[in-house]
View 1 (spheres, rainbow, N blue to C red):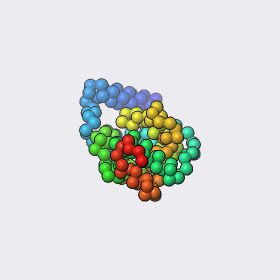
View 2 (spheres, one colour; view 1 turned 60 degrees about the vertical axis):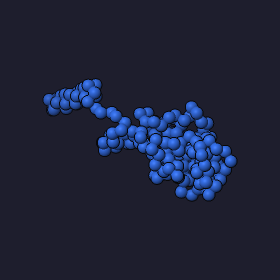
View 3 (spheres, helix red, strand yellow; view 1 turned 90 degrees about the vertical axis):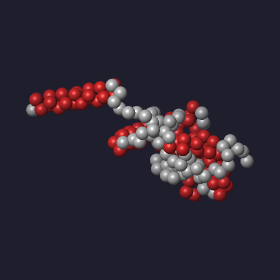
View 4 (cartoon, rainbow, N blue to C red; view 1 turned 120 degrees about the horizontal axis):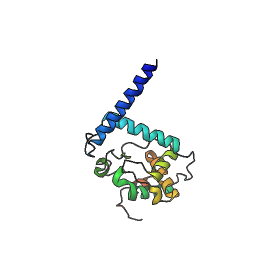
Length: 172
């Protein structure tokens, strides 16, 4: 039994060192214009979702989904998020699609995390992606407005849908 455990430990050490050496010698091709492998995608997505689930505080969204709040959230999304995450007239952003990992295209696939987790991701960003920590730029209430908007993409009032088609930075 002692030799069996020693064999497992030795194997783990050899594989760990081999992996480190593979990376250290530059054999891993880390160009952003290469598609992620299935394994890389699964590992990164699982790690991100598990981290957010563990670290996102359990808090309720304080922003009610009123027309005014949805409109404010749509303006913030249009001005700060749409270049990477898409908009109705450009649902697949070329800019966001050029990142690796690719930025989620919310006009195609709506966010599927809980609101507190979306808030946490927007506020804190995600390492090794192009998602910045918007908490340094936006207030908590603005982030919640964007989260509220994203979680109501299926039932937006016409005025909010129309706002998304206006140019970035435009005011009514």
